[in-house]
Structures are given as structure tokens and as C-alpha cells.
Length: 559
Image (cartoon, rainbow, N blue to C red; front, side, top):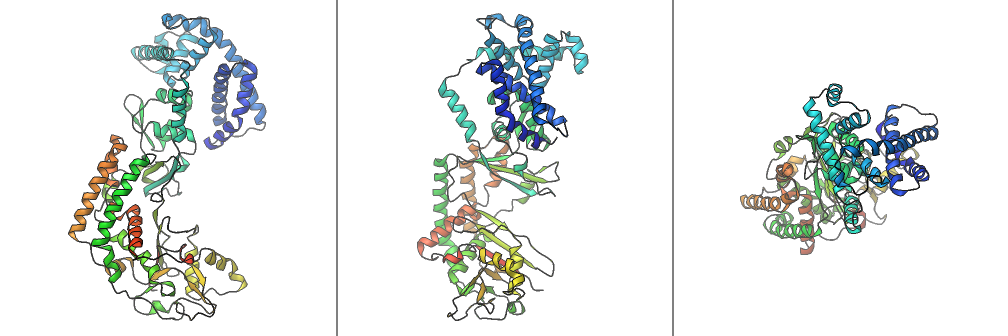
């Protein structure tokens, strides 16, 4: 059975299993122990089965067998294991709670140590025989048994009833670990598998976060999350297999995901203030000059797509220069402020994955409060290089827009509209609805004199910045950045790395340095630049029908 299906079944049956355990033991702590054992056995059995006809009966049968073993084992544990441990650790050897705690401490042991404890104390095998069975040396078995007994003693040395405050603190910390955004940098899997597929459960997310700043053993993780080590081992094995956790010396595990923690809003505020200061400098030294440049605009009403047969031009709906500059400022800053080529440095951190990908995994941790500067990212749409749809679309998503385009194929429909291939006929209803809902086309007032290119006889016109320039040619229309700006950018990068590196473990600090390069062209900086231009009056408020298509440029090649 697939792991995802088994996980779902276990989740569905958890309450029922706990109810069964409670009805048998009539004790909350014992019920927790018994239900944990039942869940483990059911989960293990499910992974080995392909199909189960009567799931209820199957789970009940396993639960009954585990309960029977649970009763017998309590008696045997008292007689066998307690005799060989340091009796000065306990106040009452015949206490049932002590046995329950003992079972719990054993569950925290690693798989190998559990096996050795069971063979030695329950199966009464000698150490030399255990060594043969496990293909280990006699000294290795003796050492593992010694370590296992010490871990059990240490467990008994801690308070069995932690104070409410510390328990609340631990639970709150776990609940806050919500990896709310997953992404990959590099070559994605041919099956377009992203990080979220491997981190579907809160448990797996908590494991990668816990082992992020410090390498930990499965025993340490099991105790931290108060679960049997077997559960941790299963998750860790899955994460190691897919390159998201690395196995380290000493049977420890270290997370191999770049995790950004944005819960410290004081730090985020300081960073935003720094971005605002540098945005002011950039606007004065470079961005404001973009508004003074003459641009080769398409200002006449032509037949659909006739612009392709003429000189290179830039189209903006209804000749709205303000709308055009919103998009151009963003795109020019994105391209021109790319001071450092960091691609080769990033490649060094890519991981070859089992699914065929070769990339870096990124995730972020949030307390649910996301600032306007965190919700931004650049998108390059599907680029069609064939002769039918020779276009590419760049757009920048931020809090300024109300974009909800989920289907990149809608741009192919827009292209057909501009070619005059789509008219208001019954067979084109669905296509028209897509274009209108995305506001990639809008209708002008019937009394309004047509002033727009790419407009059809029904007064519907393309509502996006469109150009026949290539990306390179469009960028070349604007002046290069000066050496002074490059120096400002390098200084800013160093400041950002210094502020951020303390939040990352040592094994991710080089990647942190690389990520904090070209900060001047980042989405956060461009948002601050737009805010600055808006404050100065160089950019005006957007019209309502421009908010879905702002900061978007469609590049069209000649056929």
C-alpha cells in the first residue's frame, strides 16, 4: 500500500483506536501507550498490504492482538528488565506507572537498540548470539546495550509530569511550525514534483525544522515529539531517500532544505526600513530618469496584429502611459539591477533527486501574519517557440494587483484574439469568458473614439502591455546602471547577509550569502520603489480594470 494512503487510514482511525485502548485500560496514560502500540502495528501492517476487504475487522483484529501482548508484557517487564537496571533510580518497582514509563522509554530507542533490548531481555539471547544475528561485533552489541540502558535511566531521571508552562511552550512551538510555501530552484522533476509532495504531514514538517539548526538522532526527535522512534525512523528514511535530510556521523540527521523563518516581525520591520532607504536612493539615481525617456509607442488604431508587420513598438491599452510605466519600471529594475551572476554559485548547492530533479529546496515558516512585502514573486509564463504562438509573458505578482490567472493557456487565446481569430460567436463563448474574467480584454465605451491598437469591431481591446521587442532589445532601450549603483548594490548585499545569516545554521550560511545578492532587483525592493514613485507622484493610482494585468509584459516575435 502506498504510504500516503496508509497515512490517511491511520489518521481516520486514530480516535477509534484510542477509544478502544481507553475502554480496555480505563487509564489515560496506559491508553496512550496502548494506542501508540496499536497504531504502530496497524501502520506497519498497512504498508505491507496491497488491498484489505474489511478494514474495520482488520484493524480490530490487530488491536486485540496488541492488547493481549500488552497485558502479558507488563508482567514480563517487571520480572526481567527492572532487575537489570539501576534500582536506585526508582521509588516503587511494582508501580504500574513505572512499567508504563519503562515501555515508553524503550519506544524512544533506535531500531537497533530496541532489537538488542528485546533479544537480550525478552528472548534471553546471549550477547555473542545477538552479535551473530545482527552481523555485529560482540563489543558493538555490548556498547549499544549499555547506551540503551543509560538512555532509559536518563528518561527516568527527568520529571514524568512537566509543568504546564513548559508543556505549553513546547506545544506552541510545534504548532507554529507551518511550512507555508514550498519551492524548488533548478531543474524540476520531469513529473513536476514539488517539495510539498514530500512534506504533506505536519509531522514530517516538524522533523525537518527540528533537525535544521542542529543534527539530531531519531531518538532525540522521538523524545522531542513524544512518539515512538519507529515513526520517526520511517519519516526520516523517506526524507533521506528524497534528499531533504542528510545522514551525518553518529547516526544523526541534518535537514537539507533552505528554510526562512519570518516569525520575527521586529527583524522584518528593520529589513523593510533598510529597503525603503535604498529604494529612495535608487529612485533618485536611476529610476526617476526612466520617465523622461521617449518610447516607441503604438498610438494608432491598426487592423488586428498589423503591428507585427511594422517597426518595433510597445502597446499599452488606450495609450495609458501610467499603466505602461508601472510595468516597465518593474521589468527594467528586474533586468538592469542584476549586478552579480549567481547562477553558478547556486548550482553548487543543487541536489540530484530520486524523482529526476536537480535543485535546491526552499521553504518558509510563518506565524500566519504575512506582510505586504512578503507576497511577491516573478513569473515567466510558458514560452511557445513554435510558429503558431511565438510569445513569452513576464509578470510580477504583488499586493498591488488582483491577478487570478491560473491558466497560462489564456495567453494563447489572447494571441488568437489579437490575430482576429476569435469573434463573438457561439463556438468561442468559453474562450471569451476566460479573456473577460482575466480582464486580458475589456470593452471600451461605445461612444468613445477608438484609440487602441489590437481592438476588434465590438470595441473589445487587449488590456495588457504588449511589445514586438525582444526582451534584450527592450532592455537596451534603457540606460545601463552606473558603477556607483553597482557599489551601492554590493554594499546593500553585504548588509543584508550580515542581518540574515544569524537566522541560518552554518551549513546553510553560504547559500544565505548567495541568496542575499542582487537585493536591489528583488521583488521586495521593487515594491518599495513603486511605493516611492507613487509617493512622489510619478506613478498614479491604477484604474480598476488594470489591477489584474498590471506589471505584466507580453513579448511577441515576428513570424
